[in-house]
Image 1 (tube, rainbow, N blue to C red):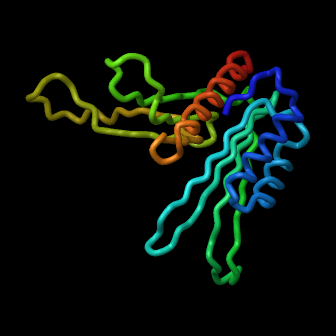
Image 2: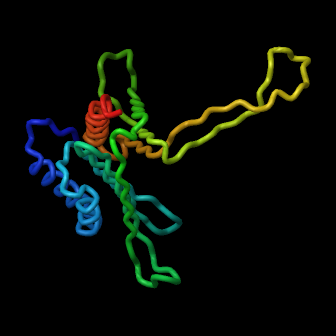
Length: 197
């Protein structure tokens, strides 16, 4: 959900905590990790996404929290696990990453709108992809020329894409507010990274 600048930062931090609490997904664990990663900075905008996944006959849950501060992008991921050899009891794992806004190289937003010829409609799905150079993906394919008779080796051609973080939400799975919330966060991030370099 987008957060206008007129909302005091303390209120946005309280809204973030309330959004984490609403998911009911280990709120104390998630909130502690996010609070530590934010490190006392003001919360400009945030987005909380709770995603259950089905694995055979079990439901596993994953939660992503993305927070925009004046200087950084904070990403927190929490997963739940059944016990294993090292930790026999069920446990959660939470990882956080703090990225300087000056490091963000791309903010890609994809919106899916149904029946666009019927007039303005809100998007039914949205994908936010953020790149900062931490993870790159290279897609290669054999290069060719325009001569159909040519059998020379032209090497490879490809695309190098930055794909550090990607999140897809849909109205059908997450609710209509989820799509608008992700788009609002993306707009806030785009505005903050516009002059950050």
